[in-house]
Image 1 (cartoon, rainbow, N blue to C red):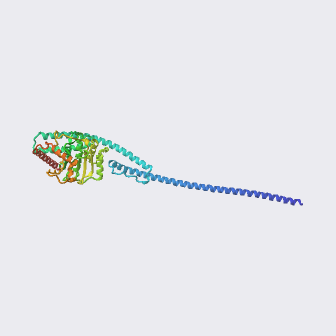
Image 2: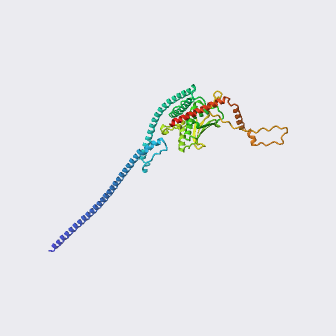
Image 3: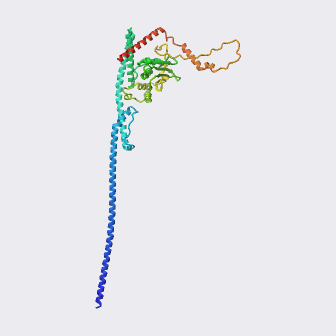
Length: 470
């Protein structure tokens, strides 16, 4: 009987142990599951955070893409604006700038494009268009020069033939005074027309078209003034040391053309009641300077700079389109002659009368002398001014009694003994002694000829002015 309760207790104990074991195993499983759930939750949280980060990064990338797209659209719009600005403003300004440098070329519309690839691209377009336009303009200008040069040379040849015929008529017939006056007027008009044609031909690259022999400087200047309307306003004075100074034949006509253009410019830019002073001077280095002073309004600094560039010997080839409309060809013709023949012209000094002083400097290598006995100077040419006489102190008369004291020499007394004074005095006296006797062989005849000539020219000019005013 006692063994049964013990057995029951043992069974109960075994059951309790089994239940405890089961409970323990269940707790371990729950704990493991709890750990697994915690790990799963942590993993889920990590994944959620990663997903959130990815979503945020995606949003940032989307916003960046939108910003880039917006910037690209802005840059495209700015570039389109720059292209329109290039076509509408910068390229037309470039065309004007190529004609005259004082026309500026506008810059970019948007400052943020400065230094970018867009600016380099637009500048390359400007450079390419500039090179293309200049090349095409030079081609067209060369064709225009060739056509104008051929026409000018043909017209120049016909004008010379007409001049020869008019001269023959003047010397062949004893015409009435009225007909003589008309012939003189026609001759003067032909001279003016010939000067304009000759200037155009020189600008287009032709030579002056007239060959001279060695010519007196005074005759060159007086002959140049006779080609102008209003020649009577030109007053020529000579301060040359000798009247036989001349210009060599190859440079005589080019210098005459340059003087005529400068005098025409002086006459044009001064009132009709003002004279133009022309002076001839031989400098100490042997050059001859022809100074032309007018009393006009003068030239602006820009006009002086442009004129100095045109008349300089190192000027680049000037295109006809750069000379204005209508083209001002005088300075361009002078510059071409200066570059070809080696004399010098300046216009950058003011005249003492408030206008412009133009100076033509002829170097010694273009000068020579002419025998005045064989080839007398024209009666219309100005004679060189007589050097002022130096009054010498008379020598003291010799007395029988010796002087009581020796006088101290003074500067005034020693002045006549200076070498410079002696040379000037001797040169003056020798020039007076060797003055050519043929200068005025018959004063009355020369006076009558000069009077008739002046009356003819005045009458011809009056007739011409009246015809042009009608």
